[in-house]
Image (cartoon, rainbow, N blue to C red):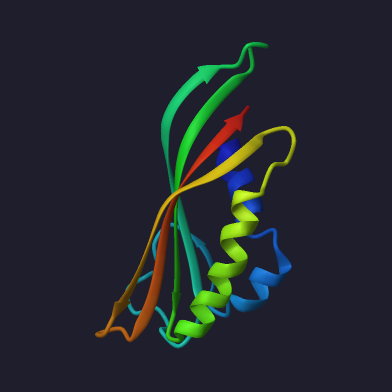
Length: 127
């Protein structure tokens, strides 16, 4: 549970990104019928492995999936251009030691009239 709380703090911790997310930042998936006139950031995680560091601290590798959604490709890219460097340079010096991007995919859903960028990251967590 501590990891989820720390992850939420990371995902909501940048004021410039928050200002662009007009719909909200959500852990998990957007509900059916979400407002597709707004920008959204959703994220989830899965545990990849657990181990101990050399100094006997518990360490875990997590996979984080993020998805940015926007009706505007320009706004989508503006959020992405802030989010990606923010996450990949993040290190709180104690628990979340690095976040490394693994892959990214840009898509458009003509039915919802929404642009999406989905990205997967690996996170080293010491807890």
